[in-house]
Image 1 (tube, rainbow, N blue to C red):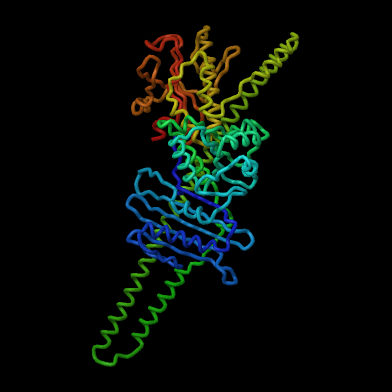
Image 2 (image 1 turned 120 degrees about the vertical axis):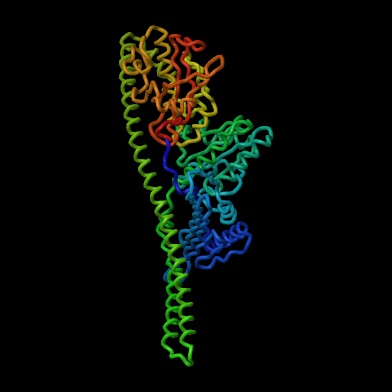
Length: 572
């Protein structure tokens, strides 16, 4: 499934404790960035400046009643054939509350092409000069070194309720690895301005950090953990919220999972609304006032020419020509203003349309998730009722030790697809031929914990069905879930699809050819939904040949695909 693309491609927002020179520093850094970009010195005075044939810079300032500047905005618009790009830098300061800076990058495509946008270098340059903060944590371009004696301060940062964005904590590997260093350093630079970054410098720091924060939240040598806000070290289950990427995945040249860390941070930054301090800013339209004054002066000159009598024959013609010249200049200026105003209105309309589409997509996703949660709660209630009955039967038989032992050895649900993959050996009746990297790529997304939990539930249900089929159950998987036999572990029927539509298979059937044991690929149409709607909407495709009707796969239930939603007529 697809969701509307946002015109907002990147956003960084950070607080600056020292605000006395904030506006001057923002202008200086922005000017240096523009000079490097356009290879010429750029005027930053209030007004509109044409930098080249397709680039316009708008500079604005706001002043308090005493005439002191308290906010500035620089907006660069670049009209390219493929898209219009707009970079907006806004800074506001206060004598009592420090300052706030935001950098927004917007993209308005002119074609159906999808653009891969990167963070403006300006963000890193501002971070290096301003040394901003996110609560107790300091934002930096490179990871801050943490030794054993500084571990307590790091834990304070992680547990700080004022921290709004992620904190990345990396631990140096026991042996130097150039690839690890390159990837980690690149990731830390890439999230500068959006996440705070720290590096456990040695084994003493790693051990001290584990001792203070607890085993569940630890970061082992060579690992990197992304700590979301509101860390709770006293609750081991909280650790699942904070994704840990192991050392082997950083040092495997073919594994690109490390890229997902910065992607996830950028996604969270995009979802972050502008602080009221910036969103409520109102800049006076000094450019419009300047143009109005120029028009008044031009009209006054034209009236003066016609009011003074001609001093000699033919003088009236000269005066009329001069008047026409002035008025033509006035019309050209008005035409330019109207064109610029029309461009601004057009971009505003596109941005508004994009926001409305995204709001509708969020509402649709919310409704779908509510339905999923209700289905899950219903299944949970049934499972609890069954467990209560079995527990009561055991207690009546005097088997209280069995009840205690069963409660102590209950396995948890995987909190990531990486953990799910490690537990595939527990499923005795399944063969999973799905591509591991495609499945693990789902861990890069915000809903990965929910998807992984549903993915595990789906696999357990397929395994339960395969066992029942081998024991004599005659129906297919859908019938198994609709009328489950005793002891079965069904999957919600509404999330089971045994076939694809004929038009979908006609156009996109090749996407549904998946590997089977012994080599070769087989068409698989039956699939389970791990999520409802959305851009990713993961699916799990399987082949039911437990009863043995196909050569090469007889007697097997094969899971051939776990990953994002495949193309169908709706997504195309």
